[in-house]
Image 1 (cartoon, helix red, strand yellow):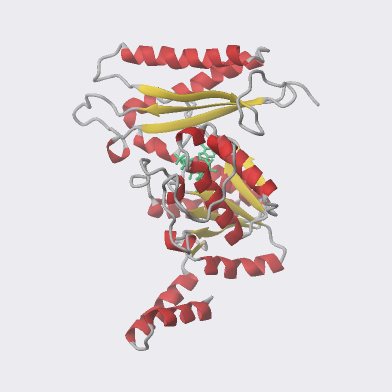
Image 2 (cartoon, rainbow, N blue to C red; image 1 turned 90 degrees about the horizontal axis):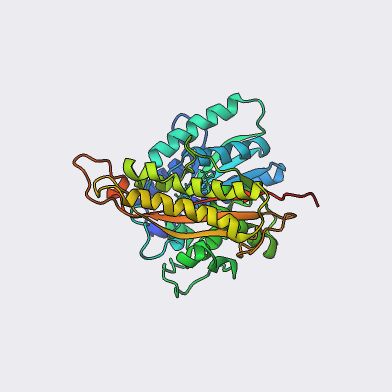
Length: 375
Ligand SMILES: Nc1ncnc2c1ncn2[C@@H]1O[C@H](COP(=O)(O)OP(=O)(O)OP(=O)(O)O)[C@@H](O)[C@H]1O
Ligand SMILES: CC(C)(CO)[C@@H](O)C(=O)[O-]
Ligand code: BAL
């Protein structure tokens, strides 16, 4: 790695003398950069990952990758813990991928918490080291820049942007893709890049983003990638709200009402558990919770209330995410929803409005309806 970094540095500076000395110093720093108080390496380039990865391959070490966009919370940590149980080396990527954000979405304000992410990872690594049940620990965090991830230039965030993309249809057009038309193109493209860079035996994704897990499984199958997908359960707050990096936007007023997603889905799930298989009965229960909650809020004064819009409440096939009229008890189904929590009205003096002034926040959640009969 070192020799190559110097070569690239030489090409970049085109001259000897001070710039060259600086390049050597920065190459040395990069070669040994670790998260403070931990052995976790910080890898910033594709080349650095490849150089780290090669001996693990030759030694038959299992590498597990946990892709994230940083702003780490317990949901991410649960995936890292799962990875450490069955991988010799856990690599976490923390990259806010612009290609999966629509032009009107929250790329500019997306929470970036690098310093605290590093502290969280160092602490978790100590916990993993003390737990004899783990195969491995956190070996590296991959934190690339956008020029590194898009070597031919960033193609843009527009629907009709031209560039090298991985596109899976029709699944990418459904549900999340209906509202975020470039989302799964961005996710599949960046995950293909991450998988090619890290070459993990296993990749870890959260159930919270259920459609993303279906897209990734399909990409792995259709492009014959030698990687196994592991999906970890959704980690929730004690009142049921799914942990999400975007929850920081909510502020206290909207945070209290944000439990409506889980409440709606649990009520629909209870109909299925009571024996209902038809879409109408199951979804009616979820829609009733959403509309009752909204009506309760609308009855309050603007200083107190929270408004939200239901983007979708869905009952879908677990393999295709296509809407179904009846749950096949042999395969079950996916109940999922997306709600847009609108900015609060009449903010009160000193009110905690949330990160970035409390813009509209789109929250998602889901529940798996497990097969009701054995096959
Ligand atoms: N509550 C959770 N439980 C389990 N896994 C989660 C949870 N939240 C996120 N993940 C998983 O962590 C991985 C990285 O997700 P990401 O960094 O986008 O966090 P996020 O909380 O989903 O952020 P956002 O609010 O932007 O959706 C994904 O596989 C995602 O499904
Ligand atoms: C998988 C992922 C890291 C790709 O950017 C992102 O979509 C996420 O955090 O879920
Ligand atoms: N967790 C999904 C990433 C996104 O919403 O962009």
